[in-house]
Image 1 (tube, rainbow, N blue to C red):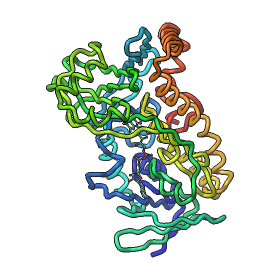
Image 2: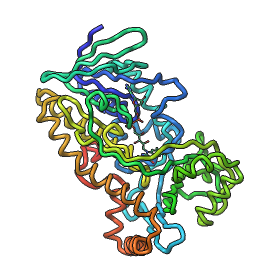
Image 3: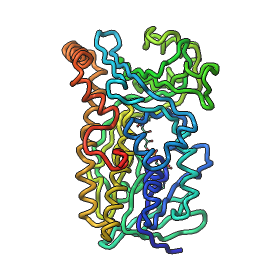
Image 4: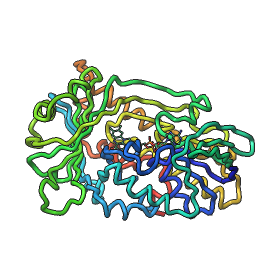
Length: 416
Ligand SMILES: Cc1cc2nc3c(=O)[nH]c(=O)nc-3n(C[C@H](O)[C@H](O)[C@H](O)COP(=O)(O)OP(=O)(O)OC[C@H]3O[C@@H](n4cnc5c(N)ncnc54)[C@H](O)[C@@H]3O)c2cc1C
């Protein structure tokens, strides 16, 4: 079977599905190729992790007409964030009221994003979905790209003017094209679990730096939450970074020992943690594709940049890719231009690069700088935190970064 499209998206995870949906009214012929069936229990994008979506990401999803459906599921506003350094004096407190917004961001489970994005994608008559389907080969030509895709027992040949790789941190597209990555392992893994505390979270998120790595507690109401329901407002999503050497031991602890170890890391600032749900782990690394724009190919989301989850920036960065790329594509299509031309793609590349560098520098320096016990570094970072806590203009730079509002904003993020 041979098919011709304007835009071919490889990967129907959070970034790929969002991009297809952002362009659903553009009149472009769009196809999405996704490797894993939507009902498969091992769908890697829409798993149990809780995602802190920034204020800017919420606006992007709202602009795409998707936020209402997410809010109708369970989303939890983050109204305050407290950043602290375990065993030291520094802390920073960030409050939504300072920015005159209702929330700095929202906690949404990845599975909830999947429950909204996947049916929306399947229901779009104008978007062809190849799923489950495996990308086999890819050729770039001056006029377009050609791919072969194994879909069930059939080999399909698909062509498009532009291919977007949204196939995650182990991108097949990057492998096929010999992509060059900046790569760094952290020697750390993130353990995630939902825990219930004795006190209500009061919509406060905690980011606590420890010598094994950062530990985040995100306020996260239980699915189907109702005011006053049991444990509804005492539930947190934990992202606990441990050294790889500690991972096996920490995962193997029984619940009581796991809670005791967690409590020891956290101290008593949120009271006692009473129970934990199942745990799972993710290896952590930095991976940045140098050439994220190539001839008729653009990489977005984790396929372009996989970063440390400290400060919850990864998907937010990916959604800013989606908002910027959909804007550039729609404008080019509106002018009757070729959406995969080098001029159109160069505009996207120059738009996104400063944001990548800013977020990578921030997450990488937080992940490494706060894991060190070197006295001069400890003193410097704690003085920095105190300064930020006391000086609103300094704190505002951090707040706006966490809210996804630094740098050039897309039309979707501006609500225009
Ligand atoms: C522990 C943890 C906590 C995190 N917390 C946050 C947070 O609070 N806030 C935040 O913004 N981000 C967070 N992130 C980052 C966020 O999860 C990722 O940035 C996001 O999932 C990336 O989405 P993606 O669609 O780019 O890639 P993926 O989610 O990896 O999706 C890729 C998709 O492509 C498909 N695919 C792969 N290969 C192929 C192929 N060859 N052909 C077709 N399809 C293919 C896959 O099946 C998948 O559906 C966290 C990450 C971790 C590990």
